[in-house]
Length: 511
Ligand code: FAD
Ligand code: SF4
Image (tube, rainbow, N blue to C red; front, side):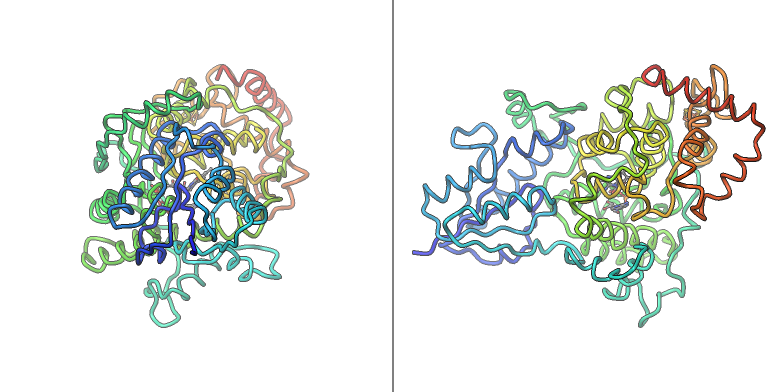
């Protein structure tokens, strides 16, 4: 008799997958909580707990829909703690005749599964995960023969291909991109919408994790776990975003405010990345909301959001599959420094970093500009090795999976790919941070001072970065202007800035 074993990974919780359209006696599903996944990097405790909680809820749903399922919990005796060992064991003990899996998003897991299929004695098939707008190789095909992989070109093609906000083959409003409308600072006394949080009780999972020696980072309130752990909660969060946050999303997309961790962001990345909901559902829902309230939701708010999902998210995935595995070793600036110790504790006098890191430790979340222009910016200015930066980002955020983490971290944030994802490094002095946030006013350091005790570290490190990397950057047309300013500076000012930067770099853990 034919017996098929189908593997569902922890980030493949897509109940709309065609696998589940009917129940079959010959098919058994398997899900597993394994140490190879909990330990490949040091994860945030909320990330491990959140994924296990969502997996368990998904398993219960499949079972109640009549599917046969084997679920291996973390501390089960017959859990051999790796995909390969568990699958081999199940094939032997249950006499399966065929093995199937959905294409994983991560290169590491893809390699594992390909090797596994070569080693087992039964036939195997890989099927699509039916989640993304694009296939793995679509971006590679789109840019074939091109030197530059411009996101904007890809984004426009995605809009056209999927008929999103289009009128025939033209953008609905005559303009593709409204980014220039989306860079506002929040007014000082502005009270952002209170975020929707959940109060899931995940104490039992936390207890099980605590029984092992899995090393995690960050804090958790296990009785009131704030993240969505099933499809219904994910849809509720999406609904909350569309109703309450979309009207101001674009305007304040790049804004930062102390102690405000969510602002007008959707916080939907965790749900989407583990596939509780699909990008198409998200896009359809926000467009529906905009159509319903055209007088309240300006087009640029909507377009800014749509671009993140149909543009950036798919683009990053395409770059990943086009450039891996070499991408993971790129280090354009040959940076070698360690990550400052306070990235793990939040204990720094720099207000912007303190806020972004503490929020990350407390929620496993920071929004895009905090990741890019606060923690990422500083790490690049400090010359930290991209491996250390990747490990931090991959561990600390609930939504961090390598396909979308590494392209953002090593690519967009660190320019370690030499310009595949971005056209120039995202670095700034205090002036950009002050322009977009309310951090500087109450900081120990002074945003306008460049040298001396109270000088904001971003200021001298910024010029030090350009000075140190001149041979690699001076010919970049988007940066030439900065080098003109640097070259025109008096020699004694330059020396003072470089000495200040040197002092900060030598005492980085004290900042
Ligand atoms: P919103 O601001 O509400 O945006 C909506 C959605 O757009 C997000 O949920 C996300 O799916 C998508 N999106 C927006 N920007 C990007 C982007 N640059 N790349 C891919 N998708 C995007 N995103 C992850 O999902 N996982 C990561 O591990 C991750 N690591 C990052 C590391 C760095 C250094 C940087 C700069 C960005 C990273 N991002 C990552 C992208 C982005 O910061 C997050 O997707 C976003 O902050 C998630 O919060 P949100 O759902 O509230 O997003
Ligand atoms: Fe950050 Fe400098 Fe502003 Fe302090 S002064 S909050 S360190 S940018």
